[in-house]
Image (cartoon, rainbow, N blue to C red; front, side, top):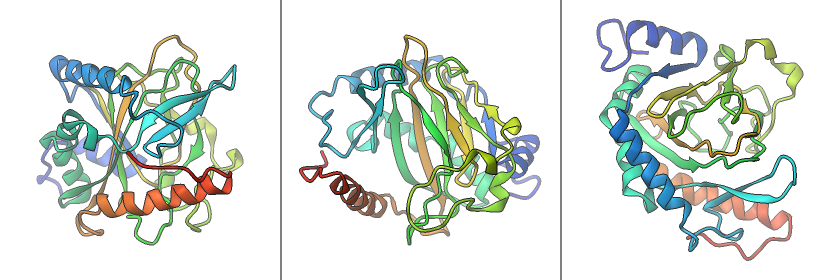
Length: 261
């Protein structure tokens, strides 16, 4: 954490909250015109039917909460197909806020656009940190709201303070959901956001999201970073490893004709 008086973007109260809770919400980081640009770009990406395919490991899928129909939900990564999204990932306001958290420059590690369409089930309780050999322990996610997020459409819910304890589940290189009895669920805070708002949370902060039970999308741009001293720029290396990991997971279910485009 940066020392008092050296903050570039966060207030002292915001910096202290992040250190204590493992998350902070920044209101109206992006103005209405910038939020509209994100909205327009997300709309355009939704129609990239040349990319949306169950065999394309760029795409993520969720079951519908009622029908269980497999539904497209996410591009991961996204900035290589969207210079607009890439511009937000490199925005000075984001990088300065991260500098206040790290006390040094940040490097983009991962990027994805989650559409969360009507009926998407959401995600179980987990931490973002996965103990791969090169996965940075300084992992921080920056969530940029394109649409409003609330309880009805499955806003992300974070659990403050647990980031101080590191990994809750085994560090074996696999994704794990956290058993609910390991967390005080009464401490949960839903990240209610408006377009242009930004939330930052630590890679060890437990979080989850409920289903989207509305008839509208809940789109958010997720950008994840590491401190420069924790591996430097490694986005390309991450995705090379991640794609191999995904192919192995798909193959376990007999899906061997995967590709990345």
